Image (cartoon, rainbow, N blue to C red; front, side, top):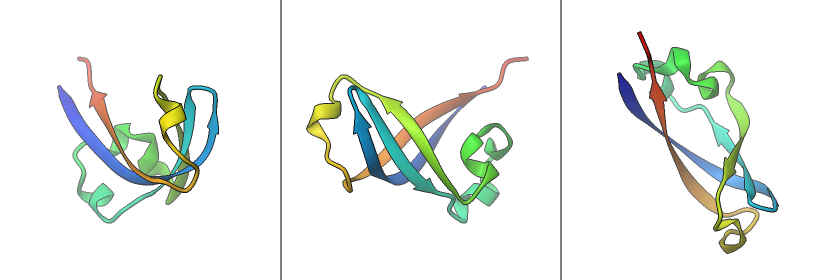
Length: 74
């Protein structure tokens, strides 16, 4: 099974090709089917690292939407 996960965040820092994005847990996390598998659901605020070749196109303080996938293997 594979589910799409989205979080709105703000770029906190940029190091090379890594964006450090601050995200906040929203009320939608409580209803999310994959919340138990998503590290973002463990606390209200979290910094996640996003590796991208286009990091130079972003700025600190910019709002972004992180879209990821959680997969469960049986």
